[in-house]
Amino acid sequence: MNNWIMTVVLGVVEGITEFLPISSTGHLLLMGHLFALQRSELFTIGIQSGALLAVLLIYAPRLKAMVVGEEGQKGKAYLKKLGAAFMVTAVLGLTASEMGLKLPDSPRPIAWALLVGGVLIWLAERRLLLHRGKEDLGWWVALVIGASQMLAAVFPGTSRSGATILAGMFCGLSRTAATDFSFLLGIPTLLAACALSFYRQLKATGVPVQEEWMHLGLGLAVSAITAYFAVKWLLGYVRTNTLIPFAWYRIGMGLVWLWMVK
Image (cartoon, rainbow, N blue to C red; front, side, top):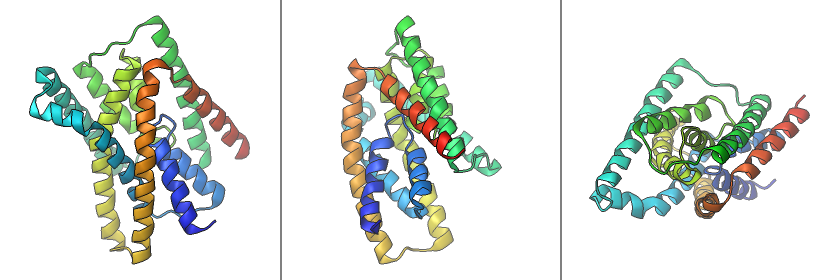
């Protein structure tokens, strides 16, 4: 496939899957195995940055309101909980990186992560039928959500947004409250991850050539545009719908890949 077409395709896949609970990493890795793609680490950073830019634009007014105090003490407390959750993620992430705790990026573990994640989404939705979710986020819930991001780092195919939304729902949050906190927490998390990966990549390989920058820019732009509409859609969707379709999608995709690689 033409490199420019593949750049657009990967940008679209990243934009759609980064904040939907279906795992962007899992989809990109499986596409790589299926089509024998050779993606540079820098390109991956670029399309993730595009998704980050999209969610930052969407939440910029709310973040500004919390920072300047327009939401009062409740907004300031929420911002502190975001900071605490991110610190938990950062500490655990650096620890896991130093210890080399990560499963291989091969189809079988990714397929299992997709499958198990789908089952957990189904269970979380069943729980909401029995226990109405809360809108208020407690400190311990914020810390649990922060820790849950490590599942996506250690188990490719888990989904960062999926892990954090599920953690919130299992801790008693409503679907909308869990999704909001997950997306907001994704801003500092993705920013730190992209910055660290970019620094390590430049240190290891130096400055990319011009064509790489052009592919990077296109992938970033496509990812940003796609992610913007995907996030806006999901925020509206979760207000009146369940995540069950995502559960069945993950289960189905996991089973198909397990069958393909048996």
